[in-house]
Amino acid sequence: MSNLTTPNLIVIALIVIAGGLLFFGVLLVWRKLNRSPRMVFRRIGHRRLANLVLPDGMDGEIHVDHLFLTDRGLLVLELRNASGALFGAESMDEWRVIDGVRRFTFRNPLPGLEARIHSVQLIAGDIPVEGRVAVIGTVVFAAGRPPGVATLAEVAEEFQRAPKDEGAAAVSEDWLGAWQRIAEVARVPA
Image (cartoon, rainbow, N blue to C red; front, side, top):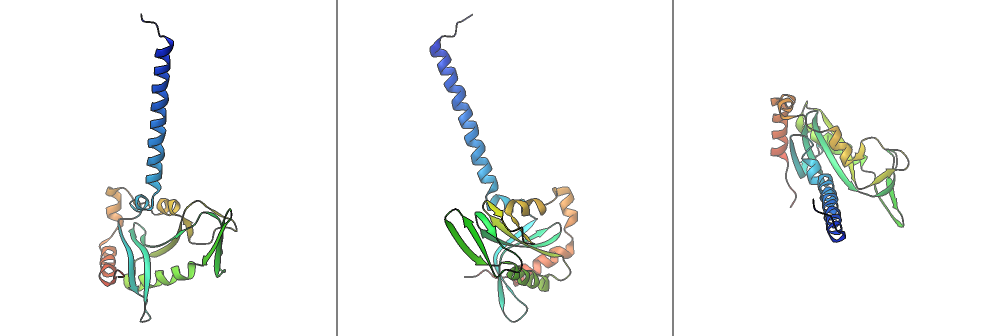
């Protein structure tokens, strides 16, 4: 039986420490990548159109960030980058974000979201259409959470597609037809 000497113990301890650091480093990178919008989008719905312009029903056009075909119908998704305390409500014209010394405001996205949902509904017909404003970043809803607003992770959890064997039944031919009509009408801005 061999004796472990101090130099051998030091080498073993360094190997264990290096292995632990490598493990936690890979875990952190994996978590970061798994939260990126691109990775989250893969979990939402069966199909996605991004950065499209649709007729608004009043001889104009309206921009839509993302449109998904989900098990529940269509999802209009608008993204906002924000980190910190978010002060916003359905009735406020402008919402404020405070993150330490950084402060900024942006226009209330809910009226625009309703207009986007309406435009999609005009083309889609009877298929259900829902909308969400997804906040990307670490945010605290300081004055309460406005309706239709969530973090991107919460939207992904809410609209996560069913497993393939169940999801195929959830998307009917009528819904696929509505999706095709939207894809034909939509244009990508130059």
